[in-house]
Image (cartoon, rainbow, N blue to C red; front, side, top):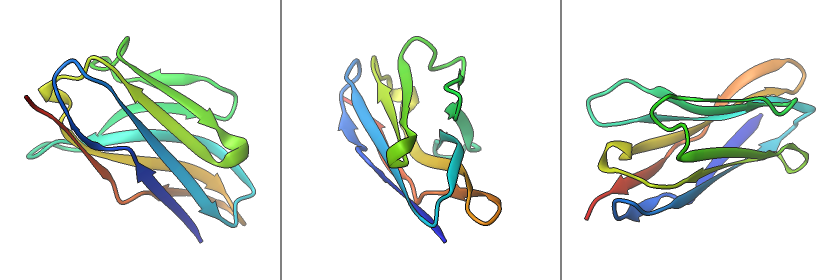
Amino acid sequence: QVQLVESGGGLVQPGGSLRLSCAASGRIVSINAMGWYRQAPGKERELVAVVISGGTTNYADSVKGRFTISRDFANHTVYLQMNSLSPEDTAVYYCNANIRTNFNGSYWGKGTLVTVSS
């Protein structure tokens, strides 16, 4: 079984920064991709950013130039550096990973709340 644990959420003022971390644990053979999704109140969950094992990254248009995803797959960890935060970034942020154990599977963390407010 694989577990993902997010950390780093909290309350920040508009224009501020936060760094999220997600650590995977369990019977991991390899990590194919890790990424971040978010879900704001009353909205559907959406992709924020993803990084695959080769290093390729993909970002939602709304966060390009402000957020940076990075990985340390050797330590089964992914980070999301969020700068120039706005109230529209307020959401629960979920970590997602495509991980090979005995098979390839998609796993989710429980989420961490990011609130951008003055």
